[in-house]
Length: 372
Figure 1: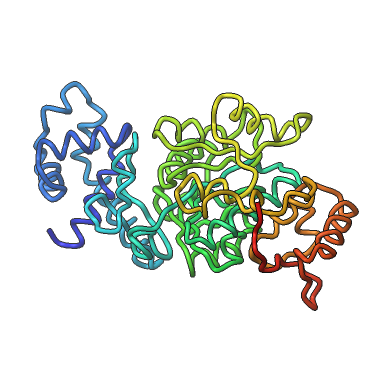
Figure 2: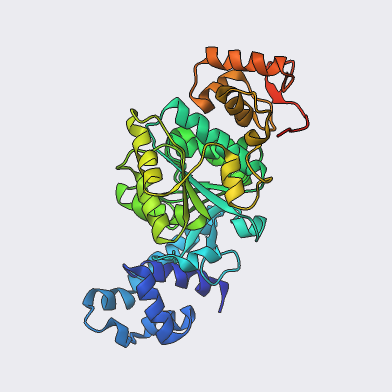
């Protein structure tokens, strides 16, 4: 099969209608290959699986739809987009388990398998209208997990999604942004710089042809890809009725692990997470909880190995800082505590010789022998 027919044929298949996976699979079972399906359509050979489906028959033999597929292919080439189909080596194997497996993925950057075939991915989602507590946690968890080689998947939306990408980017980690429009359409506009960074070091992908504007109808379907790519989904902060909870529903259907960060019981954006925990999803209070569940921890949470005479605030501060140097205002965001309480805890931890402070004012955990 020529590269042209390979790519254009798959694009054409993706345009035939919904449910696209069902149509595609029936045609592949009947004709055996995309090339044979393409030739059958050109010759007007109607397969038995289209019996009684007038609209589908018309699309199958419509030369105009073939022309549209060729136009999409040419535009993708002009934009230097990658095109990934189920027959390509870089197509994520986890998609084979999805209900509604994408027929074509358009992308900038490198797909996860191109970076490392064994790379583990985690989806991080949450509310657009989030609190400072949620933003701090999204950045903290994402950066910490990315430092351990986990790829971060999210939707590049405002709020939690954007901060999850930023956390991975800050530490030089890999992150995937799944869009609900064409991969060449930056949305929201204020994330243009982030978009460029992800294109350069990670992957921006979409199942929609280039030039497709984002549409509310596309977001639920986009969410199945976000949850499908990740080994599990972390919900940072979300209302009971939200796009993040749709992603959770898709993840549960896909038998993915769901993690949730507990939140203030009086804050609406925490109600989704707290409800998930009540229903049996895994509560997490620091990145090490997820690492341990994935088999990548160091025998338990670091805070559990700190000296026993520490207050809860002191333990949380140490857990929030982990290995990197962190400023007090960032710790405040991560823990949702006032700066006054953070400074008091930092001072006590310095006196106990558990923390150091570099010339810029950022704090770091000192190397010491843990005691039980």
